[in-house]
Length: 491
Image (cartoon, rainbow, N blue to C red; front, side):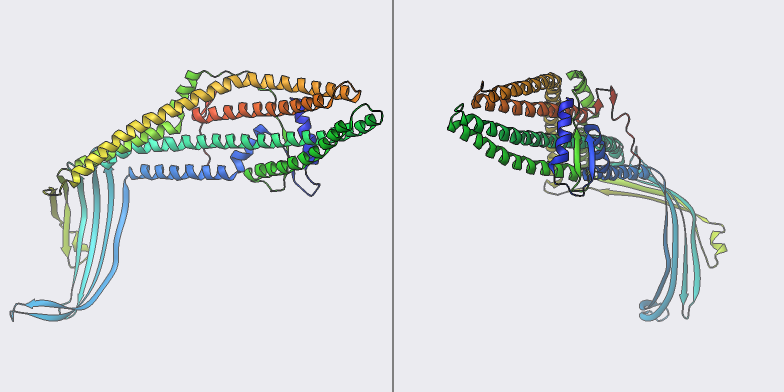
């Protein structure tokens, strides 16, 4: 409604003291854009996404081969140690000095299907002993290939393949969800300021009108057209109107300060609002909204993640409650020599196979108890997840239902506002010429103020429901595209 927007623009220019202030004119769309770009809440949302993004990048990196260099560049020992002297057939203490260096270069690759790890490495060691029996040795492993894994135990890699991609998908959709929540918050601040401005304008208009009517009342008292009680009532209206204006000005300053703070603007910024016009016709099918919510809402993904993590804990505790067995096998070459070059000549084959088994004999039911707790927790998580799904679906249904009737309420509220303005002006003129009493005038003014509040409230509810539906479904029904399909985060 253009006349209401003009009232707000004019009123804002006079609402605050004329000091050096930054002035800015905002409509709802620009307010939301600024909130998602500059607000502290948007900054927090972006960093939450980046934390999840780098967590997923770490998971992906763990699936790739890793190259590691392990080194002991220098180790010097000088001490006295006990040694056995075979010639004297007794233990004696001898001083000992030695220098040691070691290096190992290894490539490792995790194998998700079995939970094992392949590795390929090479190593070189150097040892120099000082003293009466000085000697130098090099030991080398030119190449060694190996594999290690748990035979019947828990495989974390397999569960990570299920959970981590789901977690990252949830993180992406949480970013969009939180951005839409910022839009919802910005809408609330916007219309709070709009309501405060409308109240201020009405209060200021009421002061001017009360003063005029009081002066007219004094003239009419002189000709005995009204009683002294009616004149006192008009005087009371003047006092009440001025008090109301002071309270409305205070509320306006608070609302403007809150919006400026939320948008990360200077605190003394003077904000001028341009109210959105009557929205176009848009009816959202409840079934379509539910389907979009089930596909896109990150809360649904989080519920699936909770179930998968509970199933993972059951699998882990179940396998840990039994015996554990693991194998580590490798084959390669090694050699030892007094010269560096000879350490790589004619290497000898090196083989190693290790099997380890751990069997719990008596643990007084500890492992069984952990397994039963994990299994019961899984049942709880599944039940809670279903309850939460129902709650989210109910919220979607109610929000869509409210939105679909809100357009008619906006139209009705606008019509009521126009009628109330006409009715008040007519009653005011009738009072001036003595054809209406004070009660009729007061009632007409109250109706106009109530219609003003109802109109702004109807607009607020419409746009809040609109952005709430976008948040719950991550779908823009006005343009017909999914917000999650167009996800693009520029780092």
